[in-house]
Structure formats: structure tokens, C-alpha cells
Image 1 (cartoon, one colour):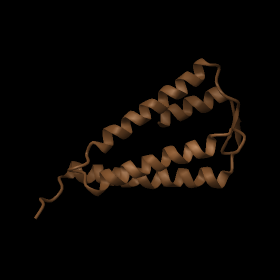
Image 2 (image 1 turned 180 degrees about the horizontal axis):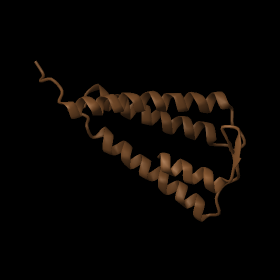
Image 3 (image 1 turned 120 degrees about the horizontal axis):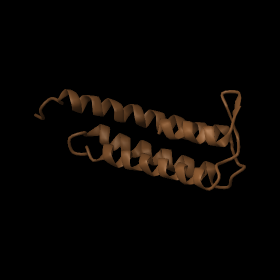
Image 4 (image 1 turned 135 degrees about the vertical axis):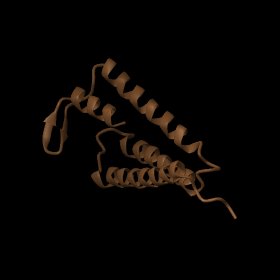
Length: 116
């Protein structure tokens, strides 16, 4: 019989399940939002968050054997932040409406970077 999970393992499992749910919600939101102004937005965004969800579920299902999932996800977020930084270096992005408020692309990217 496998030993009971340690508190840190239970926390990691809970965080991975929560991350999987959040990633699925984002993927559904991209599809429901119907943003087609950029050719690859929906397919790439759904693929990214779908992969995030799959990796999170794999890790949560067996944190002892697949604890590698957490640092892999952290690495993926580092890549996202680097991509956002490169976007800023290239001059930013168009302004965005966030929760009914129009903000500059730079503010939107900096906010997104801080969340990632």
C-alpha cells in the first residue's frame, strides 16, 4: 500500500488540479470569445492551455512519479514571460479592453507578465 502523501505533495496536487481547471477555463474562453483578428490566436491559445491542462492532470494524478510536471509548467511560464518581453521590445501591442476599461498594450502586457 502506498504511503500517504506528505503535506507538500498534497499542496502540489491541489495546485496542479487547480491549474488544470484554470487552463481548461481559459481554453473554453478563447473559443467562446471568438477572437479571429489574428489568424493563430484561437488555435495557438487553445493548444497552449490544453497542453498546460494535460501536464497538470498528469502531475496531479501521481505527484510522486510525475513531480517533474511542476518545473516543466514553470519553464513554460518563463517562456510566456520572455515572449511578452519581446513583444514590448518590438514596440508593444495594440490597446486592449480589460474588464470594460481601455488600457494601452504596454499596460496590458505588463499586467499579464505580472500574473504569469
